[in-house]
Image (cartoon, rainbow, N blue to C red; front, side, top):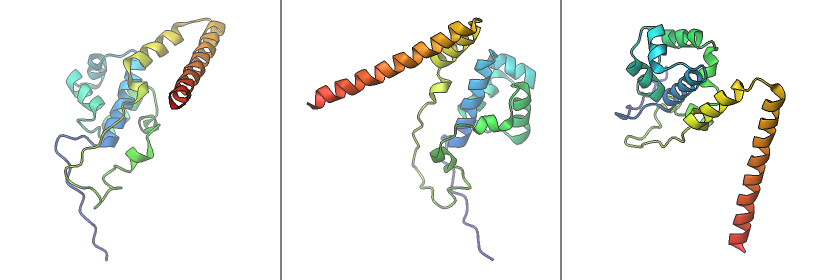
Length: 161
């Protein structure tokens, strides 16, 4: 029988990358539905501070709580794990068994979908009732994005020359 390696010690004060990801997805869904932390907490019988800790990844969300969240937020449980990078997935304690080095702090890139600006934009977009206007706004945003990327590339070429 092979002996299992012990789980690496958790670095105090540093949330697990998966807990952070799940928390960001929770915040995104809550905000898109227009729920405050306080309102979500009331529905679940929690304080807004507990919801806040879940969203930051400071406190882990247990299986039964994740189930409740998926029901209240009208989504499947898999939603909370969608768009997880391979790098984040490999930081699961089961994945890094015996490979973690104490004292290493991991830098996390903030998910652009979790930014307030993005959420406000999505809300405003869906408040536009006219399908044609919404479609044109989307096309305009895509065009502006392409122009912005092209301008950056042109500036880089000019700087290199």
